[in-house]
Length: 264
Image 1 (cartoon, rainbow, N blue to C red):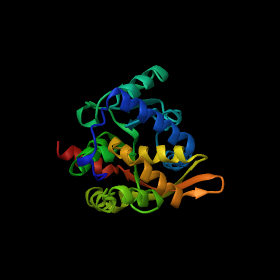
Image 2 (tube, one colour):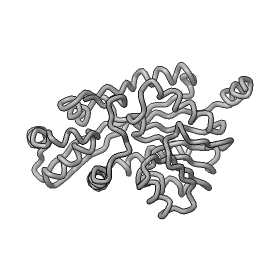
Image 3 (cartoon, rainbow, N blue to C red):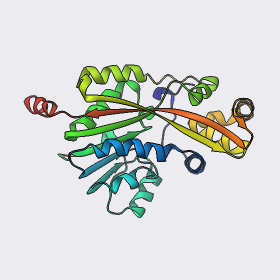
Image 4 (tube, helix red, strand yellow):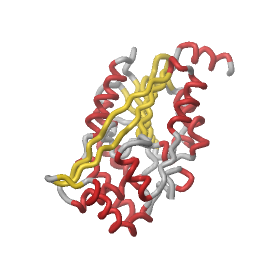
């Protein structure tokens, strides 16, 4: 199995699997520093925007990033294919515009956004569709707006864990090169940050490992995963794993807007 999107399971999982996924997600959020650090990094980008009116989150999940970021904007829209997550956000944030579908199927009309977030979503899209997906986001940016794409780094402790049980072949370097070719070197920025995952129990770090592996077929490897974490990540006070993450930022230049108009 690979973390290439072609081999990923359908994101629309059955009821029992969905409940387990939500449990794993909640544990991961409680046990990691990711959202706090990611919010700081994203806040730096948002602080540099000329305007903070319209925000679009692609794959918002439970809104751990969406909700705090939305406080910086006048209006927030969400694309979330998971029906339960979309329903939860509708109840918690009725003022959000919610699209319960994948981005490819969503008609955003003439709407333009100052900031578009796509955090840990590209894995669910076939790699040869990445650029068309990003191009759709880019079309819906205002001049001076930013797209922020967050991905797991191909190096580090989480990548080592992936490569022990599967193969992490998300080609970030190719994506980076393709974005530079399409939008220009001066429109692309790359940042790097670390997420620390800590648990007191072995059971919890194993559950997080299964969450990171995505595919429930790895549940049958639970004993081997336990052995791996016991060997590589045991600390005096529990278990720790460092996750290296990459933030790709795309700026829409004014000349990009003019070029789009010329090709209409």
